[in-house]
Image 1 (cartoon, rainbow, N blue to C red):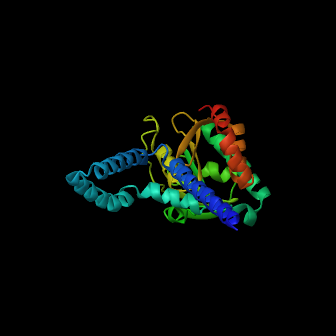
Image 2 (tube, helix red, strand yellow):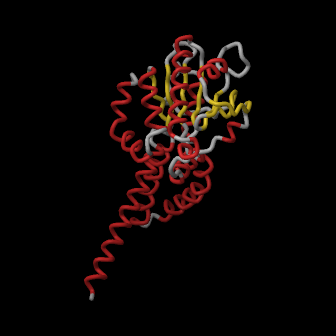
Image 3 (cartoon, helix red, strand yellow):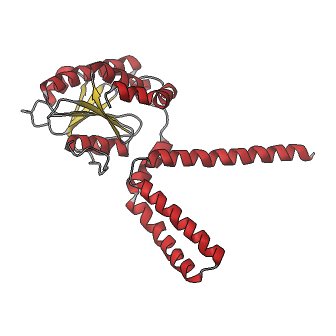
Length: 275
């Protein structure tokens, strides 16, 4: 009768280890390339010193480290709120409901219009910033702009980003096949990995992608180069074909397949995009 108990305990131990590995993987994926990496290194050093202090019974060092841990519990959530928010949002994301409500054909048609508009804007070297909503809602940023609620179309997007119009400096936010708002303000990233020659539009694109799962497209006003920000990473050098393929995989393909493509084909996409 002891054999089933041993098997059940073994299964529980394996599940326990897998759960810890999954949490560690999510944490590392979220903080990779952010300032939280230095935080993690610092916490590991503190943990090692704490273990050494208890092992050698260094009373004064133990007292100091206890005070530091107490301050860290309060300070870390405040200082690294963006990274913690990003991690919790990623854990809470489910499947995409936009395709179910709007339909894949409508989303695909919208992607075609977006690609045509971006290609035309790039040729004219008109700066543009287009955020496409996915699971994470962008209402707080929609409220900063002018509500349009119009069907996505090439002429509308091109006219919005005409330098002579009042909305060209802000971002356009798209949900499904509709432009929800234009002239929106997005959060600026403070990442040091963004090249210094890139301006506010690129920092805003990366900033929104750090705080949500949106796909953000940028057209450089100086060079006409098309870039895409996703999950805090900026990829540059897209042409119409690679941009259409990228958006099709991210927005239309099933979530499981999109995850597989992201994991297996990211290097190929970076090369094809000229990164």
